[in-house]
Image (cartoon, rainbow, N blue to C red):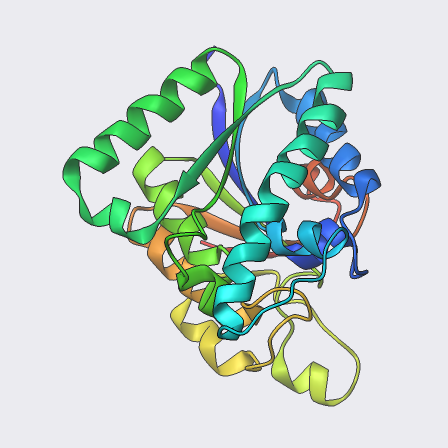
Length: 253
């Protein structure tokens, strides 16, 4: 049976459950859902959270720019983040692998081919690729997007069936409902362009994206005919509930 391929992007606020440390419970929740769905779907995960993981363990002395410190924190935190994924997923019978990418990879035909071939081999052998930006050499997502754009480019490269972006809201709310303090989810929309007027420019507390970067990611995915869903990753069973249609989330068709 041909499985549908989902690229799941998990932001820092989801992984920390809006606290100051990585939530093992949230990673276990994600693993349980992946395990329950593995007969029908194959998952590729783009995960932020390396900097948040490092902040649990260290406070760096520094004289450099703030971005240098974030890169150093990412280098410290990435192994911890992968260890937490590996430990929790292994208990559920799931195998994990690490892939670190940067934007320059997507400008190079050979690099793109290598990424695609490697990830296809991993997935076909039941290893779940867990992708993050290579923060020691690239700063794009540290500064701008919390991996939203990286997830979209990877989704296009791997020709996934669905880009699932987990955030800390029930999808995208109408601007009018937010102003009235009664958030109302935009359930479905064709294309991301019409959503631009609905979103605020606020950034998330741990991440660097906010809803703007998620819309930009959806537009990138749309060019390849890939649908994007923006779901509330703070809730338990957010993947399975979205696929069953029992949760409020935004579908960008």
